[in-house]
Image (cartoon, rainbow, N blue to C red; front, side, top):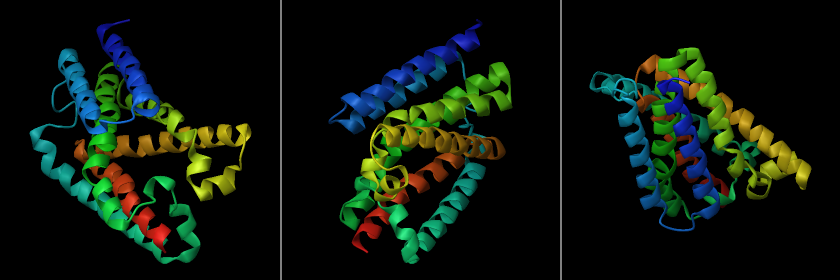
Length: 231
């Protein structure tokens, strides 16, 4: 196994440990821990010799990445607005993680989501892993493998999905079978999301583009979810 694949394996092992810490052991100090995890990823990239361009952070890509990110945010915002405006769609927006006052959801959807989730995951899967995998296996391998790992990253969060979301509870039901169905759905849906985010990364040449789409989906989701609870 060459150094490239060794670096991929090291990042995967580190991310597995990070996933367990974040979902099973971390009760406080989220922001500080996630900043340290982001620093760890930057360190891996430096040791592996990934250039800024391989991470999607080359200076020449910033303007293009921001344009793509802005378009992605606008499209997600329109989609959420439509879902919120149509009463039949509102139950799909309900999630206990967004059961706050709207102003609290706005705060949570800004910096905490950006640092705790979006920057960490984008740097890991569309930055470091995608860059390493593309170097050793090409673009298709980078997209498929990093997206599969992105799906597996969401196994632990998916375990509680039927209890967190009324809509998911209705779809999957309760019990072990419901949990397995929710996990399978979580892996499949985040694999597809990973492919979309990787393609956005490839087309734009910038990590900022998938970062914008990811933040819009999660950050605006907090705000829209809180509004849906109130409605």
